[in-house]
Length: 264
Length: 286
Image (cartoon, rainbow over all chains, first blue to last red; front, top):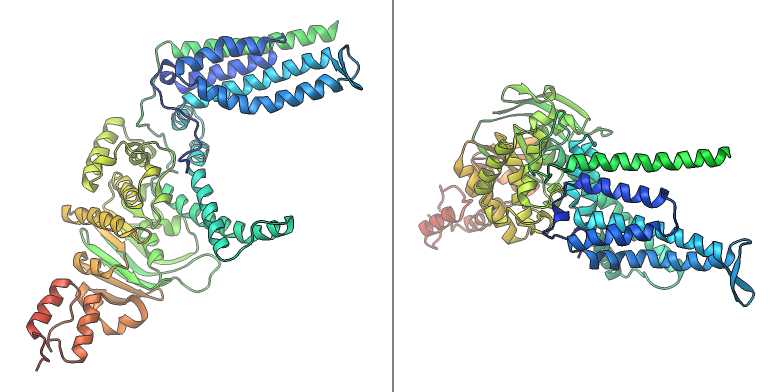
């Protein structure tokens, strides 16, 4: 059974030692650059030039490439086929039977795949190198609501338990003769005796968990403190501000270009 | 010091009270076991002492509950939890799920209290050794066994330095090994002294050895309150509420056929049973 849905891979590296906020800002900058900078190959350049070296530095390239590949490939295939062949009008470059491959469609598929690649890989890089509790800790410090932070991190940690409970209920009901395989109707009918115990037992758990969290003064008004000292190099705050300025400039540039194009 | 005066409580949308006119006083440092059948109001009483009634469960509370002379309804829950710690049945549900080591898990409550870091470190260290789980300090809390998790839960609550610890069947979901671990941890607390313990527990053999006092509830009302040997051998309570220890049961059976010394009180512990049977020497008394 998985202990956590967190993707975090423990390593000793420069990237792991970065403050979560710095990594989060960099992820944001990568996304903004990938989505708003012009150029067909921009995202691929960013991927090869920034994301890959950073994951290599963190020792997580294998995990990153493996997961990114699984997510991006199906998108890429369908984009190339659908956009490539079904692009309205456009310049045909290859004929396959009654269909023709359009260069504009291909270009669109390349750009879209690049964007998906950037979104997936930058988030993967972030999640593989950042402990979720450290992220929430750092966000809470800058004013992120702690209730929301609790829900996010606890879900990642506790969800596997719900999964294993669902498996237990499934086994228990099967042991009593519940048919869970066969026609669609059989399967649909089996759902009720599986879902009801799962939901009810989860509700009971939620109540007890709420009490237990309350017993630890979770809803106390006033500032919280943190046991873990998060790493933060002296240059990191400045770097974050610099990245924020870059993001804003890229967005500004984009808006400026759109306005000038619209005027002309 | 815990004082309850004429406490009657019903949960929201129920008409039948879960607690009926309970008046109790538990002095500081006492170890008090709470027994009774399912639905007798044990957990409700635990929640009332801990202030979760009326702060978490609303419903209808009459009478007064005082902790150290202060009415619990007048003190915010986040402050009450520093006076009365509450431990639940399910160990897993008490692990916050946001922490990666036991040390950090124990810190969860202390962070919420806004304690400075060195104070947290000192308290964590002290609690780890008090509960006897120093070896778990760097482990991932959700990967521990039930008994280990329950001891982490106890440590997490104790680190908040309550004067009273209320445990609601802390071993009911544990295997024998886990139960023993938890009992040993609770016993260490009692031996160290100073802390008042209220524990709901069905394992009467254990209660008989360690409790200073046993309180029995029947249908939300106090049915008996006193010395463990007195309450646990009370014949009128056996059938309807709490059962009896195996020692009492054996001696009672022996008594019927005259194998128990006539004026000797029925036993609740192994030692008492051995003594009694030794005295009768297997021959019908008298």
